[in-house]
Amino acid sequence: MVSQKRCRSSHGVLLLAVALLLVGSAARAQEQAQRWWKGNLHTHTLWSDGDDYPEVVLDWYKSRGYHFVAISDHNILNDGTKWVHPDQSVGDVPRRRFERYRERFGDDWVEVEVSSGVRAVRLKTFSEYRKLFDEPGVFLTIQAEEITDEFGEAALHINATNTVEFIPPQGGMSVVEVLMRNIDAVYEQRERTGQPMFAHLNHPNFRWSITLEEFVAVENEMFFEVYNGHPGVYNDGGIQAPAMDVFWDHALTERLRSGGKVLWGLAVDDAHHYGEPSVARINPGRGWVMVRAEELTAAALIEALEAGDFYSTTGVELEGVERSGDELRVRIVPEVGVAYTTEFFGSRRDGPAGEVLAAVAGTDVRYTLEGDELYVRARVTSSKEKVNGYRAGELERAWTQPLIVE
Ligand SMILES: [Zn+2]
Ligand SMILES: [Zn+2]
Image (cartoon, rainbow, N blue to C red):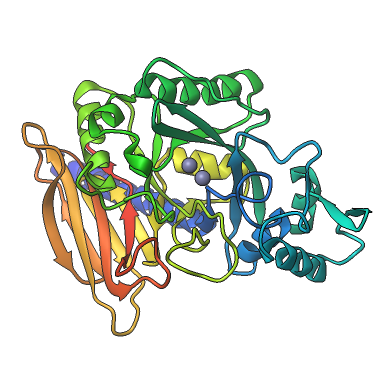
């Protein structure tokens, strides 16, 4: 009997070992199939108040190793007919931009009409220009819109990414209602069309438009901008309102305590100006997301974003982020001569919102849950100053998405 038992149990151990090996290799295969895709989800062109042609904008990103860009102009899709007039605009910037555009893309592509010596240039539509750039597994252009609404003095902007139809600003009777109605409009379109798309709340501190209390009261968004490259957005807070990290922790804590949605944090450019880099301008290259997905399609990217399988960054590159079991592990790609500090932010069940639970130096760091946390997330700050950041003296950073305690 005893030996039979032993035999059975050693059989069991063997089966367990084989099963674990299979699970392990399946997980490894899945990890190998997945990779990081670099993208910017907030971009302007001449279709609204950006200062360059969409092709020049996309060329900027693609030639710098980005894999996807969402073109999100104010209250317009890049669709229909729109002409710009480089000769009639103030200053010589529009003329120089036009000459650069023509040199780069050629007379066969660029569409100009001259009337009494004045040039009109037709802007290419989304479906036209994307053909120049999109390549499977290399680059993807995504249609988007910055739904640009207001309430009193407050500028209330919601990005809608991968939409099919234009969404007009929805209005409302309060800051919170305007934001929520615009977010709802995106998900209504998703529901109706079946196209994967998502809304994200833009730059809460732009013109100090959204208070912390209002932000926490907006319950229906899943994403917001923890970093925006516009020099007027006060990512790090000020006298009127706290930093975006504080907004994030307060909203997350409130939601997790009341059984609400998770909230993920995006870094974006909000680029408007494609000329000489300057801290006073809204240049590209300031904030982006790295999304871990199997393929470069809008559906796969959105699925990964909604699962929180991405990180946001202004320059710090991560080799891995593992949010599993009771541990959040962050592996940083080291740069010579650069030091990294990772702060683990979280809230305890009965504690204040957003404590620094730990601060750790190094390039392979982890936080193990103690048992009473609602979530933990990591923010890595580098000792390296960001080149042409949204403000002077900015240090490069990366933000992981929170590990939510079930
Ligand atoms: Zn905006
Ligand atoms: Zn914008």
